[in-house]
Amino acid sequence: MARDAGQPGQVAILSGLWAAYVAQSVIGGLTWGGLPSVLRDQGLPLDHIGLLSLLIAPWALKVLWSPMIEGWRLPRDRPPRSALLVVAFGLIAVLGLLAAGVVGLVPLMPALACLMVVAFATASADIIIDGHAVGVLARREHGWGNAAQVGGAYVGSAIGAGLLLVLVARLGWTGAVWFMAGLVAVLILWFAMTARGAAAPPAAGPRPSLRRALARHEIRQGLMLTAIFVVAQKLSLGMLGPFLIDRGIPLASVGLLNGLGSLVLGLLGALVGGMSVRHLGVRTTLIGALACQAILMASLALAGAGVDLPPALPVAAALLAGSALSAIGFTALYTQFMLWSDPGQGGVDFTLFQCLDGALSMGLGLVAGMVAQHAGYGVFFSLAAVLPVLAVVMLQRLDSRTVQAASN
Image 1 (cartoon, rainbow, N blue to C red):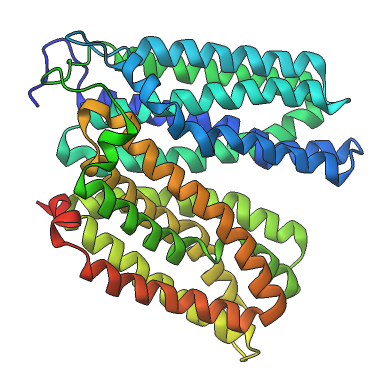
Image 2 (image 1 turned 90 degrees about the vertical axis):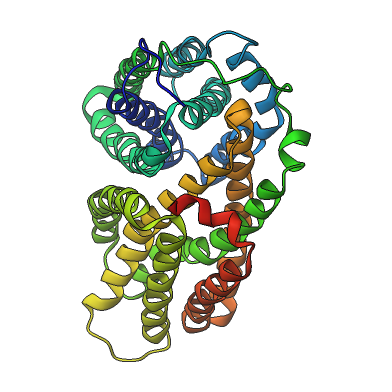
C-alpha cells in the first residue's frame, strides 16, 4: 500500500504502537499482577481476591463485538477513525481508574465495577489498535509491529504489577492508581498523534463480520496453527513458578526473577523475535522457538524426576522458557496473525486469533495444575517437552501457503 503524504512514517507508527500496547498492559498488570497483592495486604480474603478473574471476561469475549467496533473504525470511503476511537475508549478507561481510586478497595465491589468498565474499554481499544496495525504497517515491518505488541506487554505489565506496589506503599491506593491513570492517558495521546492521517482501505468491501472471517481458508488453518502453537508453548508457563518454589528457592527470589528477569528477557525476546521474523521468516522463527522450548522442558523434566543437575540450570531453563522464548514465539505468531488478517476487517480477524489464544490459555492452566499435582513434575515437564516436537511436525504438515507468505 502506498503511503499517503500526510500519513505518519513507519517509525512514528511503531512508536505509537509501543505506547498503546504499554498503556493497555499497564492496566492489565495493575489488575491481575499488582492488585491481588494490594488486596491481600489490606486483609481481604482470598475468595474476594479471586473475583478479579471476572475481569478477564471482556478479553475472552471481545471477539463478539469486534465486528461492530471494526465497522466504527472503518467508515465507508473515509479515513479510519482509529485515533478518535482509541482516545474515546482510553478516556473511559482513565475515568474508570480515577473512579476506582476514589471509591477505594474496601468494600471491593464498587472498585470491581469500576475496573470492569476499564476492562471493557481497554479490550475494545485493543481491537482498534490491532486493526490499525494490520492496516498501516508495511509488510516488512510486521515483525517489529508484533515486537511492540509483545514487548509492550512485558513493559506495561512490569509497570502495572511492580511499580504499582511501590507507589501504593508511598502514596496509598488513590495516589498510586491516579498516577497510573495519568501515565495511561499520556501513552494513549501519543498513539493518537501517530495514528492520525492513516490512509483509507483500498476499496469499500463487505461490512466486517465473523462469518466473513471464518469463510476464509487461511483463517481456518490459522486457527488450527494457533491452537497447536499455544498448547505447545503455554502448557508449562503456570507451573514454572511453583516448580522453583518446590525446589527451595525463596519466594522473594522467585518474585525478583519473575519481575526484573522476565522484563529484561521478555523485552529482549520480543526484539529478537522481530529481527528473526524480518530476516528468517515466521515459519523458521516458530520452529526455532519450539525446538528450544523442547530442549528446556526436557531439562526441567530431568530435574523434576530427581536427576542431579547444576542448581542454576533449572532456574535458567524456567526463566528462558517463561520469558525470552515465549516472547520470541509469540512475536512470530502475532506477525502471522497480521499476515492472515484482512486489512478491511483487521480488528475482527486479529481478535479472533487472540480470543482463541486466551481461551486455550485458561484451559491449559487448569490441565497443567492437575497433571503436575497428580503425576509429578517429571511427567508434567516430559509432556511439555514432547508437545513442541509434535507441534513442529504438525506445523510442517499444514498447507505450506498458510505460513510461507511471511518469509517472502
